Length: 132
Image 1: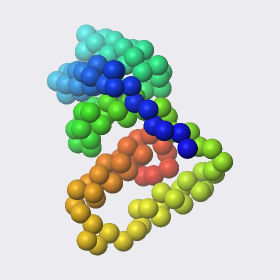
Image 2: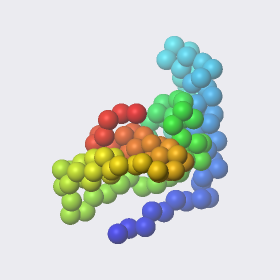
Image 3: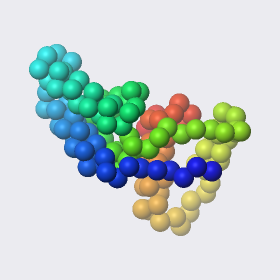
Image 4: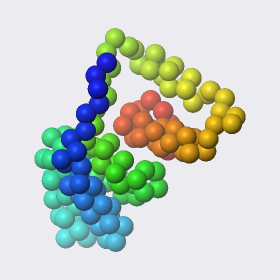
């Protein structure tokens, strides 16, 4: 099993980019305001270059705070995409659905929130679960 690696040297800069983009999208109509759209495109390009990932869509972080913290959002960008080895899509679905169907009486509320946040991250990074 591969260990997840996050480049902490890039974390603050990625956090700044995501925060700036989210603020810009909240304050301006980036679809119709050409200046705002250009700023957002520059932030998108900066994020892609920093993470070396051209598949990132910065607009996914429009209201990141509704699902995760800024640091968690930045870490999700810095984590390399999940790779499956010797497992089928069906087996992955079975694992995920069995985890979310476990009974949780007595489970600490904080853990439930963390599981909910992780399911949101999984939803946004894969097409396996329902969208949050």
